[in-house]
Structures are given as structure tokens and as C-alpha cells.
Image 1 (cartoon, rainbow, N blue to C red):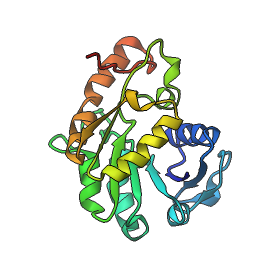
Image 2 (image 1 turned 90 degrees about the vertical axis):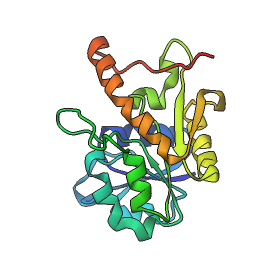
Image 3 (image 1 turned 60 degrees about the vertical axis):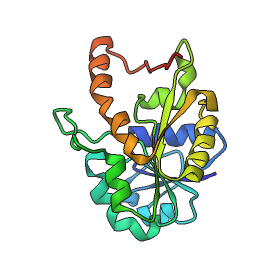
Amino acid sequence: MHIAILGTGHVATTLGTALLHAGHHVTFGSRTPDSVSGMPAPVLDHAGAIDGSEVVISALAAAHSVATLTPLQGSLSGRILIDVGNAVDEELNLIYSDSSLGERLQAALPGTKVVKTLNTVGAVIGVEPDKLSAPTNVFLSGDDPDAKAVVSEMLDSLGWPPPSQIDLGGIGTARAAEHYFLLFAAVLGALRTPAFNLAIVR
């Protein structure tokens, strides 16, 4: 799978390295590609990274991703956009308290198939779920079933087999997944480690 990752920070690098190890082709996108070094795959400008990709992952600063991605509407049209962010302010309060970043992105990019996933786990657990002592769950939200099927395959390649994946429904359900960040942050503070996740026991 040809995957473009927009962003060059910790989350982007962690995802990109794991996806390369899983056999995917990865290109990173940056507003200033000439100033970026040490990445595990080529770095282009955002439009250049998106060009030719099957899937685009937004690993941008979540608080600013709507503003950054909206001008790329033409390049993103018809593509799958995976949103892994939780939009919070400097005090870790939700920016979209009555909505979600996933919903805002889908509204801003109506021609793009937005899928929300991997925002309920720390980056390392997102790409190495076997680091935990028992199987846990990852969630998907999105309006396009075919897009979610593609994202499901990518998740499987990262160590999240289908039984570990829970499809929450349309992009409106991203609100529930994003608002979980408040509990995630509290647990992180209590445990002093991001090495944990939810397991849904039936």
C-alpha cells in the first residue's frame, strides 16, 4: 500500500517506521521538506506526498489540522484520509467539545473519505499492540465502508487483527473516540506511562 504521512514529528515517524517494516511504501509530507532530515522515507511537500498515494495519514498537530488540510482539498479529493489526532489546547482541553476533529475534517473535505482510528492509544502501542500483556482494541469511525475496509487491512498489518478492531459506525462516532482522550490523559497521569489500552470484554 502506498501511504502518505503528513507530518514529521514523533507520531508520524513512529507510524512511518512501522508501516515500512510492514511492507508498505511510505512518503512523508512537510510544509518545509528541505529542512527535514533523518526520516526513514522520502520527505516531499504535502501535495507531492499525497500524489500517487492510496491512503493519507494526518499526523499533523491536531489543533491546526483543519486549517492545514483544507487548502489541500483538491489533492485529497477521492482519497482515504486517516485522522489519528486528538484536538486539544495547551491545557489539554478538547477544542471541539461539541463535535470532533474527524467530523470537522469530513465537513471541510467533502470529497475525501475520512476515517478516524488509532487516536485512543499512544503511538508506540498503536504500532506495537503486542507490547501489552493481553489483546486490546482499536476503533474505527467513518462514513465510507470501503474506505474503512482498506484502513482495516492497514491496521491488521500493524498487529491489529480484525477481532481487535471495533467499527463504531459513521464519522459522527469519532466524537466518542476523541472525547475518550480526557480519560486517557487522566490514566496516563496516574500510571505515568502510555503503555496501556482498552480491552472491550463481552
